[in-house]
Image (cartoon, rainbow, N blue to C red):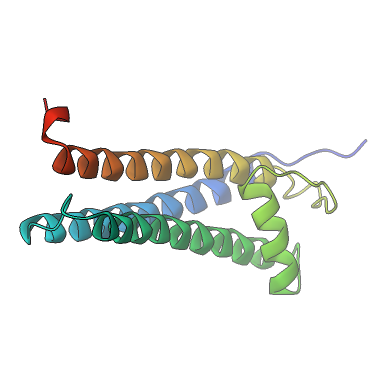
Length: 150
C-alpha cells in the first residue's frame, strides 16, 4: 500500500485556495460595480432586456472566474509534475473542481490529496457564485416590482 502525502499537498493547496478566493473576489467586485453603475443610471428594473443583460454579465463574470480558477489548478498540477500537457491538466482540474469525479486519471500519491482539495474549493466557489447571482436577481426584482420592496 502506498503512503499518501499530506503536508505538501495541503500547503500547496492552501496557496491555490487563497488565489481562487482572490480571483472570485475580483469577479464579485466587477459584478457589484456593473450593478451599481446600472443603478446610478436608473436602468435596473427598467426593462426585461436590461435586466437580462445585467444577469448575463453577472453569470459571465462568475463563469470566467471559475475557468480561470480551473486553469490555475491545472498549472499547479503541471508544476507539481503530474501532467506535461496543459489540456490534460485542465481536463483533470475541471473534473475535480466541478466534483464530476470521472476518476479516469488518478494522480500520484505525492499529490493525490490536491484532487479533493480542489473539489472542496470548487464547491465553495460555486456557492459564492450562486449567492452573487441570487443577490443580483433579487435586487433587480426589487427595483422592478415596488410592491416587493421591504
